[in-house]
Length: 499
Image (cartoon, rainbow, N blue to C red; front, top):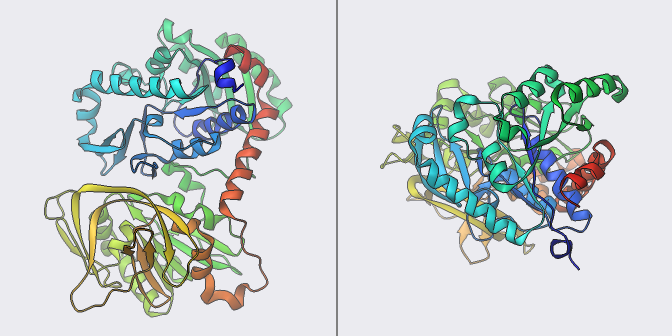
């Protein structure tokens, strides 16, 4: 009998002392462990703020982290796993996506103070209930810090959500950034008494060095806080899980490297879906780095202009800081240029926003490398896609998330990059060295990687191609689960969940 039927476990919730403590990765790891142990887990994050998103099989949008966690759990992703998604479009405003569909742009004050919090709370509770009726256990993830006292009344994602779900809460702290005693103690003691009682343990994450050195620290924390330390998890250098937080970019390379094909991803201010490049980062033939430095761009063999949440703002900045001219010079020098989604729009002749969908900028000339023009539209395209390259019958997969429509300008013939499974022609290519597409995930397909690297075949003939990416990801989820099993008290956690 499936364990979802034989024994229900209480929901498990991971909350943090702050942002980027590793909650998303640990959530994926626990999802994998429960799957391995015969349960049918599912992830849940009531509200997520991220520019990296994914598309469900139904063509709806959710945070990329919840898609990764669902993949670790071995189930299809669904918007019930992330009912509210906030996608920042400026320093003060975000697009609000409810159950996978945009419902408008809100500034931070509007959202946290005047948007119907009761209505949103009801929506996320209903999403959780639907999910909990289908899966066991639910692994919830909090957002940011649980001790932001000024936001507690409007909080729909942390301790109030844990209370509704009846979750066993584990507080995650990042020891690598320092101040772990103050952050753990303060985070617990600042909670309302009824919320404090929900916290059943602490996990110390990203430890470096000899674990025995923290034995006394573990005892001190347990004495101070009155809850057990359920694990001290060493920093994971050899486990590669896609991350959605923009701070993850700070861990990436930022300059070229000798002896490999250098791929530069243009570091846009509003870069989105940079998980598009996770597969390339694992290819031993490639050195991928992020930059908006014009000199570093000249060292690249391939330049990729990525997706953007605010195409016109990023295009304006590229023209202002000289990166646009550097990309044009690189193209003239025979370098390969690839644009994905917003980057595809930027490589065209013009981006036009007559209705102010993105903001105050209404029209800008593009880089002129592709003969397309883009008009922004309020209706967002969100769909999973299967396709083939024009010169191949090998099936590929990806997904679209964009608000613009691009067309070939008058006087130019169509020169599509791919053929969609429904017969539609998509993207544009000018020879082998300049191309663009709306398809996120195109770089997860081995045949497209080989096409992209083909001009450098002589340099790479002695190096093996990368492992199939789907297989690679499955291996990484298993390695993550193994790592957690070694360093957390899993038996104690199962007892806390009611096994």
